[in-house]
Length: 133
Image (spheres, rainbow, N blue to C red):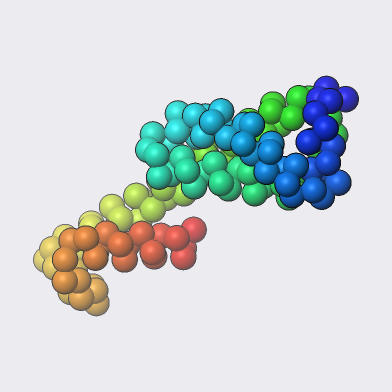
């Protein structure tokens, strides 16, 4: 086994406090990796939290052939890349919606969308993108 961290052994047995200590130990490194990929703090926070949730759920599959951080880092990278892909899909939907609005005279109302402000339009487009993703 590559890691001989007692907290890792306890966490693999279901001890949440031990996993919490692992989170404290690796949180900065995980956050830094997510921030490097995503480029903003809010998304990096979300990806960091999601990576730790996935790691906790996946602990039974961790076989110890690699260091725990190597395994956790890979989960983090995959989580951040998935978030990035999801954002790009949302961006593509926004572009398509804008193109359709231009096609019908540039008025969102013509597409059945009554939007009172640009901020609400962006929020609604993001919600639709999440539902469709």
